[in-house]
Length: 505
Image 1: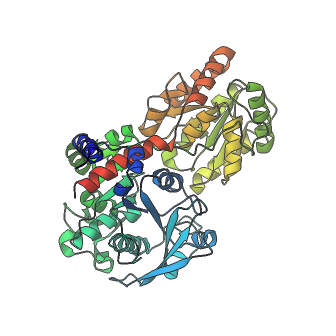
Image 2: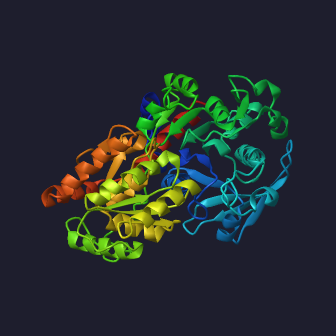
């Protein structure tokens, strides 16, 4: 072996001993570049319901220099519209009650390869990836996402696109959690990583569906897919995957407790004790920068608070709020119970009495949308609600607001608190999950201890106090804008995990 070879061998040995391989170092060793199939039901390029869409658009790209990463997503109407020039690369046979389908390949403008699963009867529908326009889950979601998971397994094995196979499969949440199970049931040992973005959504279906999903009878047990006499897609993934990740370190700890484990805490404690549960905080798109953002009324950097006030005035005008010198609170969120929207509604009168205003942007449960709309009608000029979402308006809200309200009952990671800090808007958050990991209490925002109205109002009172002190407000805004939430660090952590998982095979 020559000197260079000995050096490489010693370097590899040290990395094997520590189990740490940074993605940047992997990129430098092209001979070790591994192939990864990233399986998702959302991707911000074409369809997004929540944070998963942002992750699926950003993380594969952050990893692309170090790994041959390809994304697999169902062929929704939105997916097909975003990729009009699809190349058919393979056909997948029917299995159990799932129809045969075709596999197409597209290439994003930046070169990222996206596989699109073409099964019109399953995916070409209105509504969202998970349900109809009224918010009701599709009754055949078990079949729709079992088809996706089986397709992912066959792609990984090189049985769909003859020119490519995967060294590792990275699945996301319950809709693709069965990838690990199908590979195991087929006797294959391709490593799998499952990321839990929200443990509360588990993919529960009646036991009677097992045969139509191609599940062996032997899998219906505690160490398998059974969860209180039902099939749980997520539990199957947690049991069969080689490694589990969540989207923040704090959430990884929380889900091993009975209070936050959604009935799966015992299995998750076991995975954690085996060293197979890791929390890796999400990043955000670093292109979000109020100094260059074209959607803003005025661009600004830290310290240019006059320009931030211009954005506040423009935001008030957009939302129909009265001219005011008081603090402007914002909510940018899915309007669902988890997010503590009911606490915001209950706190509205107190905030308005204190001289504050509230602007809400989001959509979700009809009852909460209606309750917010009634609150706005009762407090005109002080509370305003835009039911819906668009990215440009969200960025204007981040830039214009003084404070962001996030009283989530639980929050695996959260992204809006990161976007807000980049614009000097201080989050007021329940101390849970990724909110605790990404907001520094009293430095870049405010944490409160319990998911209750009184606890939230305690955080709001601290915000009012800081707003009354120009010096403290400026200091906290500067601190917040100095925070970095790059995907680079997350990609390095995932890269290390991928290499350990592949190395264990």
